[in-house]
Image: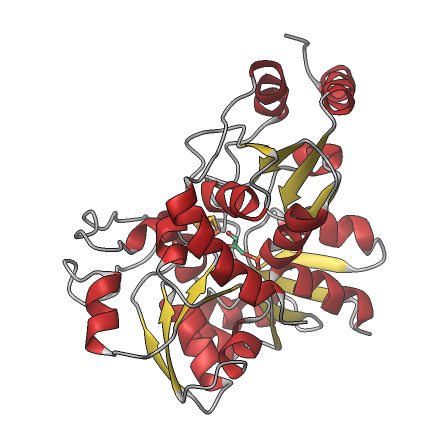
Length: 327
Ligand code: 13P
Ligand code: SF4
């Protein structure tokens, strides 16, 4: 095993070439992992790339559901997730037909009450609202996507809901993304009660404090934050939406209401501007599991292969393809 730094980066790039692979990294990945990636982006951008790039292998530096989506969209490619334990807790908050596991408690916030009792499943909610289309955030497992009509990301949720003929939709699993979508559409949005523990911990007082400390800055917030936080922010958008906004805005300073991994790109791509985290503890431990060493090991050992079986992959692909067809 090489030591660290450039040596390791060079060896990864050599292996990548040998294996005719591409490296995709989410905007929340560690700085050094972003540096070796061919593409760094938000969930929507990375899905589009996974579906269209010419290569034999995709090494996905992100969390499990992202590698699953890549495998669903590109079944002929080998998809590797360098850290097998890189999961998204929100994706585990909804089950197809067996009760979900007991909700974990995360430090830094009060657990919200359940909108549906914990033993409730996706099939139960579908039975309760027959004929209502299910809009599923990509932050879900493949079997949930397979039971859904269409997927969405934080970048396109409103467009996806508006694209459907029905006056009401079931939107799973993030209650905050659903609340944001409901505020921006005339349609009725039936929400699940999932949440991202990294964004859920932000409270309106954090915004007030940040504005006091940085009165010149605009506040950007991710739609996984609570609705009370979104309502008092200046701009609500996905991670790559924040990159575009920061670049095009005349403002010279921004408070960033999402996982702190995004600060790396924001600062690199906007050297003359200032970026401050909304909260310093907005860190997703699962996104940080992937290191240069794990990427190197993934190439050497061909681990961990993510492959979705066809009976789930085919219906899940329909839901993802419908989303990708929306411009
Ligand atoms: P986006 O990059 O699509 O905004 O997603 C945020 C996220 O939480 C991914 O896990
Ligand atoms: Fe899941 Fe939140 Fe981490 Fe994204 S940031 S992977 S939604 S826990």
